[in-house]
Length: 194
Image (cartoon, rainbow, N blue to C red; front, side, top):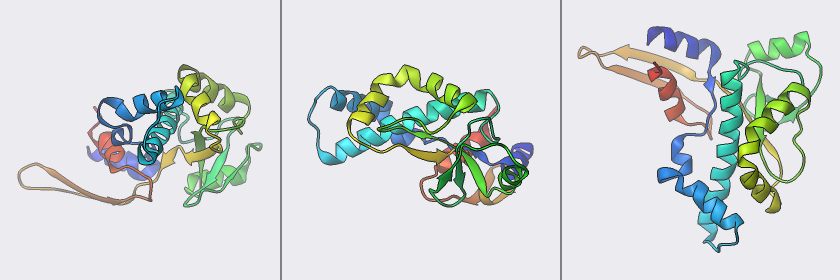
């Protein structure tokens, strides 16, 4: 656990959407499929369904990047997000400035929140995203049909102020801060990973 905490402080964690986003037994994703098939749902349910569909696809892309070890580094064709904002830029050629910004947590690679239009990425990153999205083409097409704009989300989550303390009974108490939209459950999952 001590080693995992050190890695989390240094690298952050993959910025997955937490399981709670998808509802019990992924009911929100099922609702999205029903919505895209023409079922009428209440406005608040539609919002949950659309968000769950986008989140599922984002998590699939991030899982691919975690699997190949590129979730916290730059690849050819990367789109970047300025830390603490929703501002994106790129793709552009790899430079010393990009490397420095990445190391300082000033920028992060950004994954797709799919919607209408083309993916912004190119080259290797575009290939990864298209491959990860392919099994969810029905959801991606449904999201595009709603007219939602393409957006991006940081692949990497910096865990601020991570403190930990071992209690006398052997339990671990952790404290940390996350930005809005991040899920504490993903940090805890990384702490508990085997």
